[in-house]
Length: 405
Image 1: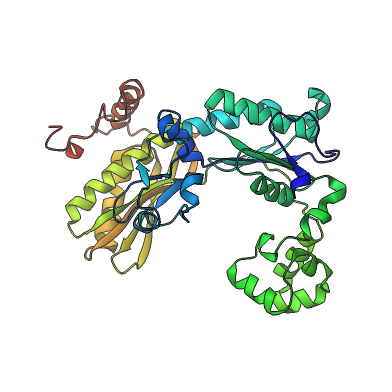
Image 2: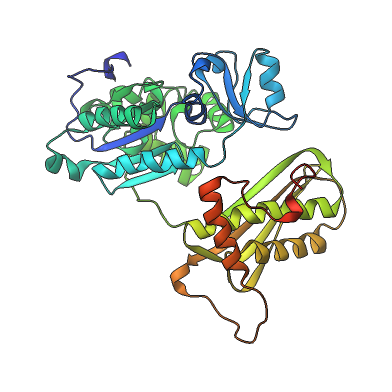
């Protein structure tokens, strides 16, 4: 694979003709964002995590990964693997802010940007090449330089003819590199890879394929399609056969509107007290409502998610009379759902979500006979205060700690 890799500062690269799809992936994104203000930790085993007994690793530095530490791993497990592990608690709002800026760089090149998460996206630059008098690989190099210069973090870029190969290429470029797969060499690039490289192949499917002697992508590509259909089912068999032969017709789809917005919390110690759970629901409702208002959205359905100590998980929802973006309204519905559907039992995790979203421009129903105070006005004023003085500037009195009070 070395012949496809482009080193930093290179001025020549493999033929990128017809390779208009880029996959850009930030390197250890959450950790990289935090290290901008803590450069003394660069090169050390660092994770971003809550650090509690039930916290999970949100991101791990490459130094930490050498010890086997991975994202989504329980923090306690990570600490056993690497006793010298340094834990940084997440900075609220930081990752979304950096992500928004990075996506803005992508959109300077093309409107065809498909974010997959905060730290990765597909770009189709085919239509921009003539306008920018450039090539896909040059644009990939420019993106890497801009992201580093503007935000002090690194990213890896895959350049290819199809989405599937571009994503594989960016993974092989990590950390802080670029891999260009010429269109004519797509199969030469793919076929030596293990079957696990194919999208849709998890552990169980991989074991199933290997039991049939299909160990590499080349093996799947050479297998009769009828055999794959019988073995894997029609849809999956055809999907893997197409990918193994370098076919992926999916287009880059610009970011679709949010379908729901939510927040949840896992407790270090199971909670029995329903009044304490009510306060957590208020805290979460505040976060969800602030996000809705920031994005100019309201939602018609409020739902809760409750995971009990035995890991049984329930979700319950209720549609409101009018679309909501006010924490008071979201919280009231969430508390009612909790009382009705989870009145007893120790709770390990609780979450709030608002669905059925539409824009504020769709209007707000006014109740002329109501003597209710304008809670939304108060919360909007609190948004302004928080934006100027920080997230803790204004909070409901019930969420203040004794020290705050």
